[in-house]
Length: 217
Ligand code: G3P
Image (cartoon, rainbow, N blue to C red; front, side):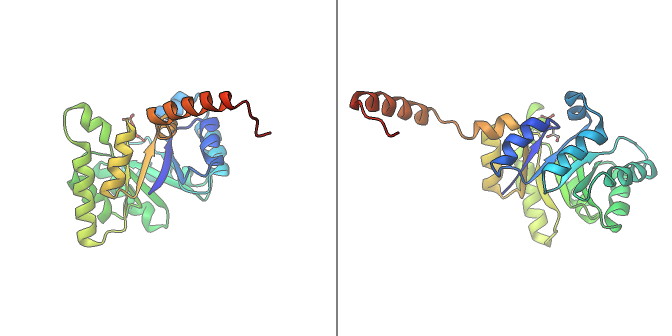
């Protein structure tokens, strides 16, 4: 399973990237706002650091404007994946940009019908938002399962990029289902290292070690 980091926080990406935890990055307008940085500057810095795909999102609503924005974003670096919303215009832009050889991430996906259309339009990635479905008492993981079945039935090459990840359990459930990628905030990726029994075990080892009076160095 590939790990993308869902942030435009360069320091947080660097910390995880140095550990080999980062296969790509996803950003969106809200994350750019949170970073307080200029979209082109921050995206370039991320692309220079990470070798995998870095998603940068268009904000226009008409296909022709999305295509123009997508082409501008693609100039930032060769590893840009152009992110377009799952609207009819977004699918039109996806088809045009993918046909020119660009990687396209179709975002804001909330149904398997939408995911099927994105695959037909040549998307490299489909981004179903698990957490936002859970927020309205629908089943985000069930959507990932359904898309996996549909894509496998027809051998679609579009990668399932599970997004809106809110917990460590979301990551593990996506891994069990067979999502190709999860994009998670840095805090969730770091939380995967924690376990109460690890902390407890370490505390006991440290106590016992102190009693031996020994030193390793
Ligand atoms: O990349 C977009 C997505 O992951 C957003 O997540 O937590 O804002 O629903 P969230």
